[in-house]
Amino acid sequence: MTEDGLPEVDWDSLTFSFTETDRMYMATCKQGDDWGQGKMQDFQNLSLSPAAGVINYGQGLFEGMKAQHAADGSIVLFRPLDNARRSRDGARRLGMTPVPEEMFLDAIMQTVRENSRWVPPMGKGALYVRPLLFGSGAILGVAPAPEYTFLVYVSPVGPYFKGGITPTSLRVSDEFHRAAPGGSGGVKAIGNYAPGMVPSQMAKSEGYSEIIYLDAVNHRYIEEVGAANFFCVKNGVISTPELTGTILPGVTRSSVMQLAESKGYEIKEEKIDVDYALEADECFCVGTAAVISSIGKIEHGERVVEYCGGDVGPIAMELYESLTKIQQRRAPDQFGWTVTVE
Image (cartoon, one colour):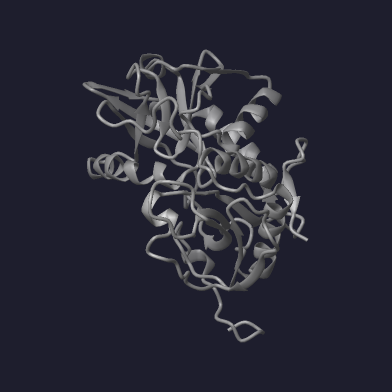
């Protein structure tokens, strides 16, 4: 037990899964009104009408970020303003009242601060922060909900790669697509994720870590890896799919591009033909949970390609080490990415 009489947390046994914490933030807003003051409350279940817009029509989005202990003893967030802006843009696309950036950041700060005992020691994991915005008002008929709820909860999670970064095996899907032009693929909408569960499960049942999605028009250009952004390296040039509205503008994606460019690498945002990726020297994917995940093998049809002898690629490892050092303030943050939770 702790000095406060609370149960000790076994940090070494943490996995990347949900653990209930102490407090959460919640605010509501009527359609057409401005957001009022939200408040902190004990973590609890929600009460919703069966006719809530989010349940019936999927009007909702979420964000994901991590708070962690830094080398200087502080608790830090990584680029939270970027998540606030992405949430704002996504809300507009889904017909919801956007949460002001200042309110979004204040809610994050409050929630992390009031759950600070759940932030793992440095190197043991992080406190995953989950902001949610959804149509909580009752409505019958496909239209924007009459009321919205913004809430933030947190959960401690262990390292995504226990024992260090390891290469993954992926399969290219010729059957399933994640998004189509003109849709909501560029928004972190809740409805984008359920359709990917079956393809992901199918790949995992056959020994693969995740699936690679191709574009829905030409069926040849790589878009995303499950819920992560894709990168490949050929002749020292780092390429990633361009933002055309069908893939998520990831915060880690943007960070990797800026970091690599600062190291002197040439970065290209372009259409990446799957054949080009199969001929690449190295491939990796990026996202909040894993940060950077090296790809050891890709299967496409009858073809199976192994990268870097099945080991972690050197550029993926270089960027992973550099980015995580910045996130934990073990290296100077020349970009101003980390924000202290006061």
